[in-house]
Amino acid sequence: MKKLTPVFVVDRIEPCLDFRVGRLGFEKTVELPEGDSIGFVILSRGHVEIVYQSRESLENDLPALAELPRGSGFSGGTYIEVSNIDEVLQRLAGWDQVVPKRTTFYGATEFGVREPGGNVIIFAQQTRGEGGSP
Image (cartoon, rainbow, N blue to C red):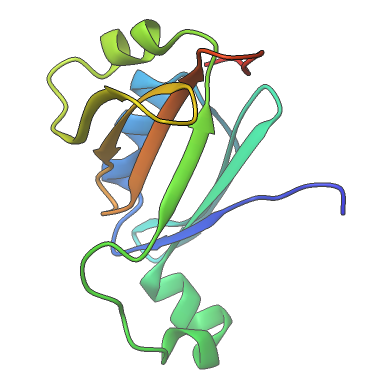
């Protein structure tokens, strides 16, 4: 295995861009339209890459996947290790935290937010050992 890229299926991509690009410094590397909206986008920052695909785009591209029932509530999320948790907290100042800043039993300081697409993102800084970069 060489790489893992999460794909988030959302109703609309545009509201998610302020969170990822504006606040967290991701860059759009690919953008494809779907009607009058964005249907698919690849975002990257350093060695981290994520994809958003609109439900409409998924229905047109892979109808069998679009027919799967939507989950309700928390069914998972993304865990991102950073080197400076306070920098990420500052970038997301005013954003509703679904997991308040805390220190875990496994030696991480972390907090979590729900991004505009409804996905939970947990940011963590290891207090034992080395971490990644925000």
